[in-house]
Image 1 (spheres, rainbow, N blue to C red):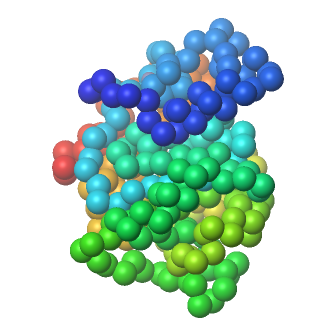
Image 2 (cartoon, helix red, strand yellow):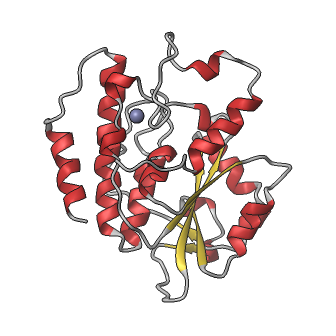
Length: 244
Ligand SMILES: [Zn+2]
């Protein structure tokens, strides 16, 4: 593992925590022990398994207010894998100038990732327009389904960009939030599909496998079971990172 600075989602979490009026949120578990690198208890830390994969694509996470505070948030995993990940807290009445600057930076072609049936049909695309001069920037709306729909409708600065509508071939594997519908992929799963559309295939596979390892560690920690470092999900992640 290389020692790196906290990524965009970690920084957003820190900023959001600083504003929190509920101090218990800052402590994590009942004993308060959480790894700052992965938010898990130290026995289940997955920082040594973080894949380092170069990507051409970038990720821009717009996060609902509480989202960066949730240990089950999977936008965090995208930021672990994709070096060019940007993260912003979303609010209906204000927008960060840094976000507007990012969206208008000519090196990027933003795509708002959202189901096509909710968008103007003329905006909907299913593939990327490949360009040598512009790198794809995937704008992911990270929150509950209701929050994501609100962000989509109430962010005028997103309205001129194509809407990338994904067709998942498999149901969501996300098991960490009971309310999550199987029909809606979680943020890390969406991120992996986007990377694959951008031909960042090694990163797509690494993120996908890393997501399964995160789920495995998270659930084992919750059940107070030890991690089996040589089980199928770990071997798959090892194989995926060997592709690089
Ligand atoms: Zn850790």
